Image 1 (cartoon, rainbow over the protein chains, first blue to last red):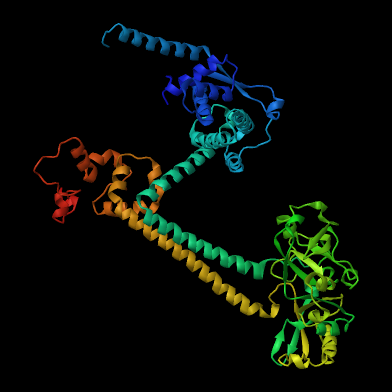
Image 2: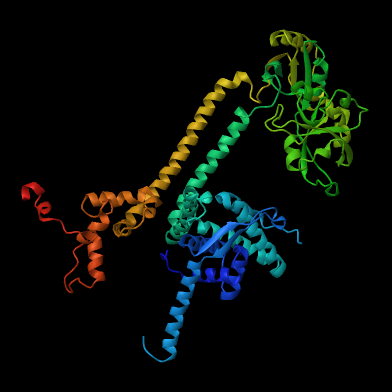
Length: 108
Length: 481
């Protein structure tokens, strides 16, 4: 647990939810993370990451309507919260700043 | 869409996973992933990933859940415990394969032998026979100079079976016949058939799963071969097919019509129900035997008493009939002539008159089973204790350094040597404040000094503990103060 900060896998998961246009669910997130990172990601890891993100307030979830193609079973849909988006952007900015520093040849 | 389903074992692992209110959602997700992978990468990949996903849920079982409805934290904790236990067991196995193998094998053998003996005892003495009104069903024993026996000749049975109107006497050929069905009939396995008189099954029960029981008409020589299948055979080999009644099957080249399915739990007069009950009239055709073969076949006999009649009354009537039996044939000189009958309960395959010795024998067997299990447990306990002694230093350090409760759970016996040695002043593992005191005594202090490079070169380490001066002098702390 990293408090209010984001771990690497959590960040991937959060960005995947955002990239998939919000209101997405675990299955596309898992596939997106696998394709983007080139690493195998189990569905259990995705569930765990989404649960941690929800606890930190970075995503919120709700159940969709029942779907016939899933045997009448609903999906848990996830959406990135403004807080999650802000945190991801801040993380991105920090990284950009560091990379810029490296690019300019300055020592940290 | 492919009709292939995820592997059964993985589905079972998912089924036993405590998912709470999220079960439906997670199962649907997993199935969706499986179908996508099946389309894109084939069955093998989809199957493997399905296993991996299910196992990942077990691994993730300790993760906190945000949905209040699915907070099954305690159960998830237990699931995680199982995974940790298995992991730890694997490590222990790798570390000390000999000890673990002996412990597991010892316990496994003890449990296996105990279970086998109990199954036999249970099958013989405790398993209900499924006979209706067992108090009015009797086994009829053959008396001769040598004592009583359950074996009659079929010809003898035919002679006295109608001697008493107060009892319906029925019998069965004691040799259980085995024959195989041709593979093209969908069977192909060896099946056991018990040849019985037409009134045998109705004398024992009125219950039937489907169809009907055998009747006396089925046991007439001109009757077409019919059979009643045992419930166990129907479940195991016929897949509980309700349409089996009325179907004709070819056994030993003869068409036999199934007329009924025995009731669940009914085993009749034998220790386990046969696959088929077939009328004796069909014996010559199915087994290629002659009527003479039947007459000389060993036969067991039962009787169903009519209401209001006692066994002693029937016994007297049957004794009179048996007295008029013809003497054994010259070719059968070894066989002593029948001199009388004795009636006994048919409730169990062991007669009531032998219950006394049976109870004593069962008590001895139960004692042996208990002893065997205790020996197995003592064996494992000894091995764990020996292992604990060998690991006391490691365990002491682990617990002193504030390890979680898990190492303590791995085996209480592991801790005991540590605790005992600590009482002698050689360890600290037993102390509840062990982590706080770790650097003030014994092993941990030594390790800490080594780790920090504070042990002086040239000065030998004199052991794990330095006794306090008052101990060395044999004086107590109060006196020293």
